Length: 217
Image 1 (cartoon, one colour):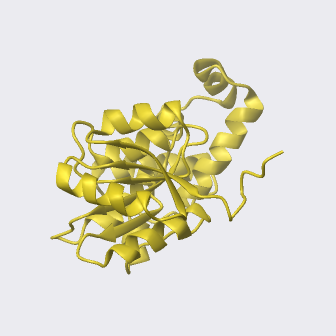
Image 2 (cartoon, helix red, strand yellow):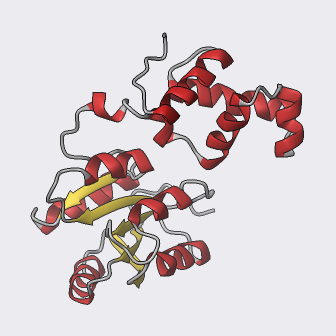
């Protein structure tokens, strides 16, 4: 049986960029590098999503401003999917916000277009091996809004939790077992840095009001 994690096998890659010149150049670069196997290219987020759902790939390279969903929404949608590719955002970053936003959304790496192309290739290799590759980021800023790291299911659970629902009621409303509710809540508490339902609910309302909060408050 073929080993899926065989490091000698080419890394399956899909590319998405609205600029035809950039997409063509990236395609040529990956196509001629024996370390990679170029599976699909597209100019839109929807096209990329359709391609990787049909033929799974290891790494996706996307532009942050993909039409029409945008890179952030595409990353958030894919992180909910099993066997989704690990995503590298390759783009311009004039204000310095994109790496932080990409990491919060669930991307595995960011490469600025001003860097040598070899940096993109090496980042894709590292990401395929499970690494996170970003330029320097202030981790304190990333922790400022941990709600951004929650999945859609976890956000929905947090909102339901804030309404006072019990575990049994959560299981009923979300059509999952009580054990699955406990599993999701455990992950939720860990991401928020809290240890109880009351702290999670306080965090939720503080975030909605835009008030600064600390997990232990």
